[in-house]
Image 1 (cartoon, rainbow, N blue to C red):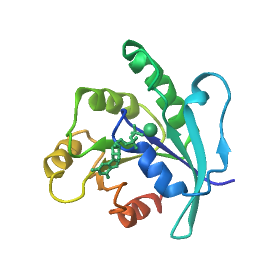
Image 2 (cartoon, protein in one colour):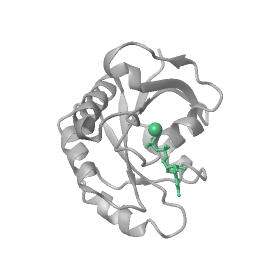
Image 3 (cartoon, rainbow, N blue to C red):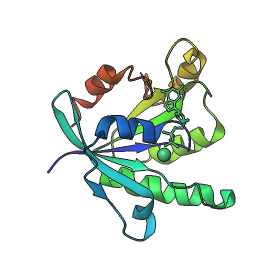
Image 4 (cartoon, helix red, strand yellow):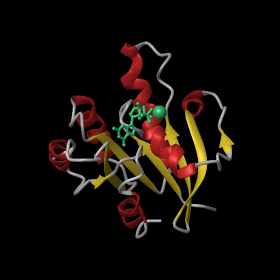
Length: 163
Ligand code: GDP
Ligand code: MG
């Protein structure tokens, strides 16, 4: 059985962009069960020979924004509980916002190892956000540009000792 990596974080930080980059054409499973699993995608990834399953938490687009945190929390919790490691993604350009801090509080109580990922870190425009991410208390963030494919080697190095 392949190890499982969940990608979690608030909407629009780039989770699905990383999922698509990792999984590419190998989208093996689309989970259509009811409940929390209906909003997520699963796929198989291979990163420099490291094989794992990836869970992309997603699908709030059609929801009443007032119900977002509860649903996101259930979905995030379910994915993290199932995973061997979770990538907690923040947006380095936007910096840390209150919802990131709230998710950080949920994740702090989890037994699953967490790797903090500061996405959209291409160029220098993410530097301030990277510093803010450090203050979330999950150590040095892996700096990534999911869209441009930068930082993938650092992500590999962070995953390697865990999975
Ligand atoms: P999700 O809601 O967390 O799944 O985020 P998406 O993957 O849908 O991405 C949200 C937006 O951020 C899209 O417009 C992406 O093109 C953009 N995005 C994703 N990764 C990057 C990145 O590395 N750099 C920049 N500048 N934009 C990105
Ligand atoms: Mg998404």
